[in-house]
Every structure is written in structure tokens, then in C-alpha cells.
Length: 114
Length: 112
Image (cartoon, each protein chain N blue to C red):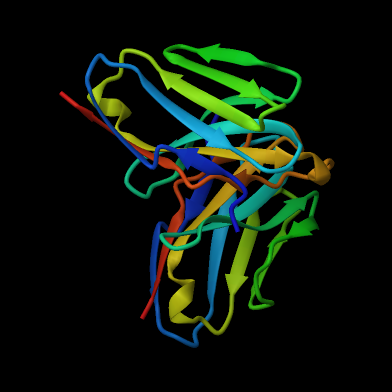
């Protein structure tokens, strides 16, 4: 079963607008990773944020992490039609220290219209 | 650096058959993990291998098995296929725990 939930489930915006997706999880974590998936293909790694970090940037992406609220957000600025995809958060639970096991959220479907 | 390679990309099998999927990780990565993605259950962890040892297994029946070779390439096997096994199977490669996990393009398995 999935640990995380993402909000909203679906988001529709115009090119140039910003898109914000939120992820909530249930247990203590070592890290949280965000991924993009196009049309049921492979997952593209976007960014990893560790539990001792609060914010990370990568190009047009900004990720925040609030471990006290067990939540993270992904902001895509100046969105483009090519950003249309599903976005997933995945946590590395602290209980799994020593091995790699990701627990995925339910995903947000983003549609960016030209 | 080459990415994670999964083969084949698509498979159609009949109920009761077995199937083997392959994953070649990024060079230098010793951890390979497998995930199943379905519309109903989303992305679920199957198992993880590191240096040829299975370190963790998800909540799947024994029909799902895997192995890892000395060159870190991994295979997963599903025996006695059921219709519900139809899914996208994804493999992830990483240097170890608490590092980035990079995924392949997946193998789309259809059981008829």
C-alpha cells in the first residue's frame, strides 16, 4: 500500500503559470524524492531532499520539506506544455535505513495547456 | 553515463506461463530495486538487491522472485501468471540507501 498522498490529484494550468503539488507522508523519513512520469513510461528523477534539508532548487523546480508536518511541496515555475505529466513523491522511510526502498504517493496529474 | 536499461519493453503472456524481466543498472550502482505499477494499487515495492543479496521484499506472493548477478544486473521472474499481474514493472538503480534512485523505462506486461 502507498504511504503518501498527493494533492491535488489533478491540476490544469496555462503555460507560464506556476504549478504547486503537495505530498504528505506518514512515517519518519531519511529522504524524499520527486519523480515525473509521462504516459505510463519510466520515472524521471527530479530531485532528492534529505530529512535535514528544508528547501532545494533545480532549474525551474523548487522543493520544500517540512518534517514536523510530514509534508513536501514541489513548485514548477513558468510551466511549459512539456511539463504535462504525472508527478510522484517517494519517501525513503527511516525504518529502512541500510537499504533502498521507496514508498510512493498517489501522484498528481498535471496538464499544462498552450 | 548510460541510464537504467530494462528489457523487454513490452510482453504479452498467457495465464499460467512464467516470465523473466531484465534490468541493467547504471554503471557502478550496486543496488537494484523493482516496483510494480498498476492503476488500482499505484507504485508498489517488490524487492531490492545489493551485491547479489536480497535485502528487502515487499508484500507480494512467492510467485514473484528475483536475483542479481555479480555485474549488478538483475532479473525478476513471475511464475504462474495471473491476469492481475498485468502491470508496468519498473527497475531502479542506486548507489545505496539514502541516495537518488534512477528508474528505467519499464516493462509493460500484459497477461491474457
